[in-house]
Image 1 (spheres, chains in turn yellow, red):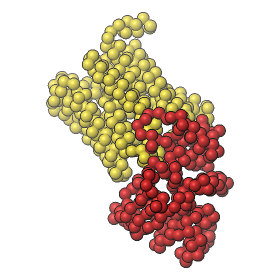
Image 2 (cartoon, helix red, strand yellow):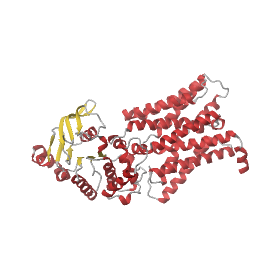
Image 3 (cartoon, one colour):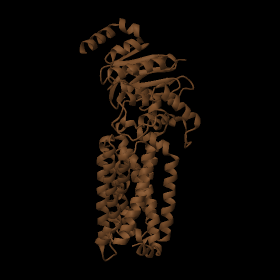
Image 4 (spheres, helix red, strand yellow):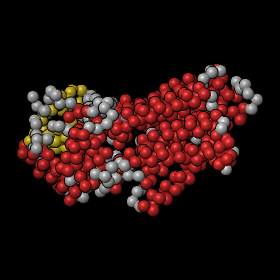
Length: 282
Length: 235
């Protein structure tokens, strides 16, 4: 088995997949805790559908580097959804659902009408579940992913304490002089970048899993914000690596394998949390 | 100039006025209790003073040099916080966040001050504990220690003893009284009439009629006597 693995590692596309996969897993896990605790899990899901819609538009228009269109559109939607949610709490939820389903339908329709490929359903499937895109990365995409990941991690480290303060108690933060609205915006932008990045790895339907699972697992057993954050980052990277290796060796689809590994990890962590006792469910 | 001056303030949400022509001022070291029925605008007043909500009219003035970053705030607990995975120390330190600007990490002085505030609130031994595993009274003291990290002169408290058992509530009042003696001005929303009449220097009554004055004047007023009697009957 090791030999097969080493044999595969000789191919550059496998190495790219591993590098980008690990980076994406790291980034996506960082804000998971904030999203779960702020009850924003659903926004990540909605944004991934928006990214799917934008991706199809980019394909139809024949944009050479799709990310250049997908990224700004997703960031704009993230900002819109979050600020709408602040103004009218009742409408926030419905707005997310509307935008996400709308983008999904619109994207599929566009793909159908302007399809250039002979195998449409495979194309759609690949965009939604990311079945092969991680293995077909070009050098330029790899570099772009690395740059974006570094930016995400840097922004997170720099604003770590602010993000904590705004997540734990938005009114207190705002009242004592932190610009909570601006940091909500920063959080939204980071989420959008992460989602566009993660589309390569798991496809747009499974992104939420990548964001939410490691955070939920880490919250089962850890008691401080720092340890939850570190644990979910490590766990996410380990799960992504495991998932990638399993899918390379076993020929299973990359995205769903990674999510499945995450789900198993969640089960194990829940069990550990239960055995240690005391930590209630979030 | 007074520490805080509220001038002809109109409170409420779009198209719905809760209180109008509200004016009062507080000196350093005052202990103000805001009382009144539910929906009379107590929390709205507090949010307006904190700048979380714009007033419909009038203005809130602080003494020169006193800004949002010198005021501590003890909000009511939210559902999110009850199961938040964070240690006591992490939460207390976050009180410094507002005036830290964009400096990414806490300084040594801030860590020392956070420890002092935890010590004052009697939660220093718990500093590595998980917030969600503490009792209600302990959680409230953590939030108070955090507020102290932000506060220089003034502390605003939104029903600090709600949900606490009588003993924890008593301890909370003792802590607050101690802070007030050290010169911290307190503004507290309270449903606990007995405590308000024991500790407060001033009372603000919101409702159909508005009263502002010293505790003694409130007890002597018609409005005060009626409200006190009704609260006592209700208990």
